[in-house]
Image (tube, rainbow, N blue to C red):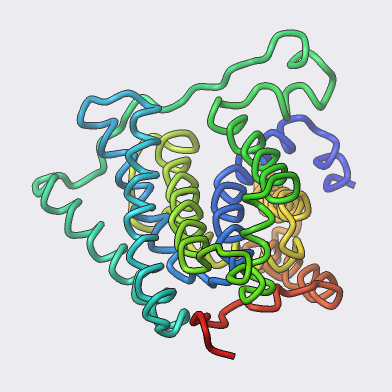
Length: 314
């Protein structure tokens, strides 16, 4: 009964939306990459690099939104490296992605130790604060959950709408989707498949880094290396869960976040005290795997995903 009561509290859904926000940024970034035909397994490391870059920029004295821009630029730089190796050079997207993750994580650790050699605990910054939207924040249940969040969270949901409109309502979005479905048709129209794919990876990687920056600049107020904690890999699964559609991917991110928030609340209430806490930690991942299996059976994978394209070859 306590679990049912938890599901109908505003604080629970406020926490779920907050947990979902970094997942939304990173999932949209991965979705853009894969829609163009490139699997970006560098997402985990790019999120770590973005989390550190945004936090370090603010700690050095810049504004919060400047820190967001710095994080995005760092992510785009790693995305550019990934795209150069996988698109024109045609190297394995799996190997390059894992290499980018290792490079981004290792370089972040090196930069942290170089910038703060004597620090034993991460310094804190003044993070984004919740902003209540007048009138809407007063609505029962929905108001505190959706309209009393930080501006960073509002940006995540707005970005989902923008990505959806661009992908399905603009010539640019059509070109990106065609590059992942039928690149030969794109080339026949006189467009550069390589440029489209590289641009998608660069932009998508920037969004991944912003998702990492959310953790240090909105969810928390400091940086530590374990904070991403596999969220990048979850985002790859969320793209599949969402059938490569922004709206469904957004729903998947909120669903996973709700599972995560629920297991935290269940432990706090003492429900199932005799059950090992690891069971509760597993719960959001197990439920997400089940949902992923169900949804993936009907998912339409982009036909040219992970398929290199060389103009003139059949």
